[in-house]
Length: 153
Image (cartoon, rainbow, N blue to C red; front, side, top):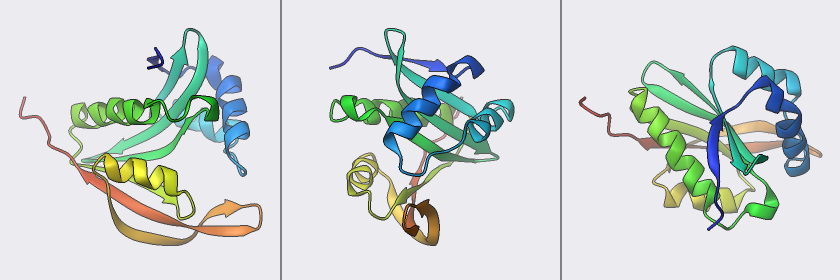
């Protein structure tokens, strides 16, 4: 298993995160959107192997719901359980934040990600038509949720 650690994303990480986003998504987020997420106080996490960023996630929590806005593991590191480890790390943040539900959208065409989310306990609850931009128009998003057990601390 690849040895990695998770860190809070810093503004200084954004060039590397943006490059990873561009390398892995046909229609990437902009650096400005990423900066706005950090400035808004969202949970912005980088996955590092030594000092190299190999993944990231943007998580927004409001009231009793946490919403995974974006998540990526570099293609070269996929299939090693890192996506699952990052999801578990994010789930712990959700629980610590007293979220009762963990929400995400996933491209209808992204069956690999859908399998990961289902294996992690997410269930499909809806469909957003034409949600994602893609090179040849728009693509639907599958909405998935996972109910969380909030600690009674």
